[in-house]
Each structure stands twice: as structure tokens, then as C-alpha cells.
Amino acid sequence: MQTRAPIIPSPEESDGGWEMIIWTDEYLTGNPGMDGDHRRLLALFNEFLTAVNAGQGDGAVRGVLDELTDYTRHHFAREERLMLEGRYPQYERHKKMHDTFSRQVADARDHLVVGSGMSAFLLSFLGGWLARHILGTDRDLGHFLSNRGAADH
Figure 1: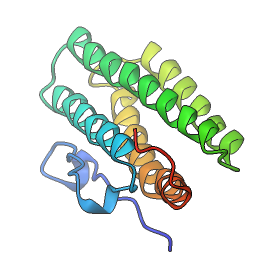
Figure 2: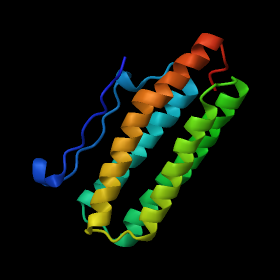
Figure 3: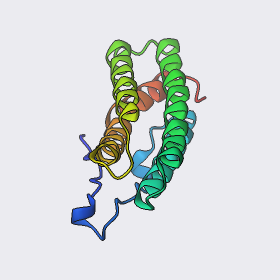
Figure 4: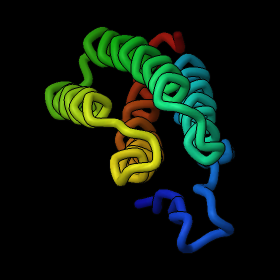
């Protein structure tokens, strides 16, 4: 079953600001540790979105983005450990997605100027990637781990 990621309207399509991603049970993977991380990631994404929408300065927006990327690294390390422990057959593919995402966010962060096209790109990229990754790849991983009786941490 393929699930569509929620679309995050651009300011032109909404009331002038980007919209938050709201946690729903659709995001559940069946792994409580991963689900807790995902809730936190979406909350941090929403903090970043709020900072951009409010027109906060570059320093404040970068600070929130840095917190989001730091937590993302923590989360990716957890998932990769679970994949190795559970002998997940898609480990290499999944890890490559993590590595590519991390590299792209770091590159974009280096060019971030609030109010520029880069902040709009980051909102669209981050929100879309996180939602699609959780709803697709991570849910597949969660189901695999559940079926194998792997630890839920």
C-alpha cells in the first residue's frame, strides 16, 4: 500500500505562511522508539517553519535548523542501529537515503538567508522529505522489525 505524503502549501497557495505538519496515526511505524523520534522531528520541523513564517533573523532560524539537523542525526543513528541489529535487507538503500538527506540539508543550511528562496526550498524539501520518508521507507522498516520481533527502542 502506497501512502501519499501530505502536501505543504507554499505561501502563494495558503494564507501567506507555510503550513505545519500535524502528527497523525498515519505516521506510526509500529516501533515506539522510531515513532517518538518522528514526533520530535516533526515538532522541530514545525518550530523551523514557525521561525521562518515569523520572519525571525538568520541566527534564530539557523539555530532551530541546527537543532533539527542534530536531532535528525541522532534519529538516523538509532534507525541504522535497529536495521543492523534486525538484519534489515534494505539497510544500504535506507542508509544512503539518510546520508544524501543529511548532505543536502547541510549544503542548503550553508546558503540559508531568511526570506530568500533558500528558506522556501528548505521548508518544502524538509517537510516533503520527512513526511514521505516516514510514511514510506520508515513504515516499511517498522513493519519489518515488528514482524521479526525486534526490540522497540
